[in-house]
Image (cartoon, rainbow, N blue to C red):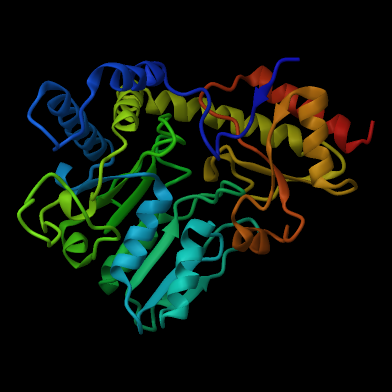
Length: 383
């Protein structure tokens, strides 16, 4: 039985062509670490890291390559932004559909005296910018929100959010875990202070990679999450203040950098085509699932207002049993449960049961979407 992968919201598969080869070359032939030597392998690693910064900066219209901090993933970048910026007594505003990558760090910070307020989204995951304006009538130190829900795919109005934050002088951190590589994300146009992206989702790179793109002003106020060796200012115990060294202590994931660089190169000039393809898949899936008795799929009705992320709730059978049947009988690989986002499920009305999440990607075909829909209809009917 052929397997059909529908878990791209967790991690993309397959990866971009050339990713595995680039990582293997690094492991088998490079033998160096960026900033830790002047021999060819170390120079090659440093050049790859610099090119990756430059390409990500260009892709997201971010301020400068040195402001592109390479991270082990989006969760690290979010922790870096929250724990490095917020202090006891500060107030932070989030949406009610955030992932635990935002909510868990904030839960710890709440215990240290930070106030957290969530702007309530609709049962479809949509947010009214007017509600954010009301929330910011009380002074806030920071606004942190996802660009799109990892549960239902609904896209939040990041442009309007950024404009509201800029008008009030509040830094805006955007978690683009579900949109980077899928939609155009423009740092300057969205008036961002920080943009957090994973390497292993829409950017089609390996796990354990990502970036935090920062404005110079935000970077100056941000305390490092980790400190240690950087290959620079080795005569001092103090963490270097220069970027990116201020936030990149320790030996980097060099193979991951080579792999993500290969993925970003592949994406160059292809993002619009991938986005259009995924839009067609979204329209096809939503049209089909709406005709299946015994299931519902929360999220925005407009295919243009959501990513290809579909939480299917089976009304007459257990979601876990449904996911198991989809895999064992039809080869459909999904993600069942709460998807590390209980806040989103409470908003959507799917807590605590969760949902069976289908998330096609760049390599998914229309025939595979049809196969998933047919399997879902059989399972929902209890056949």
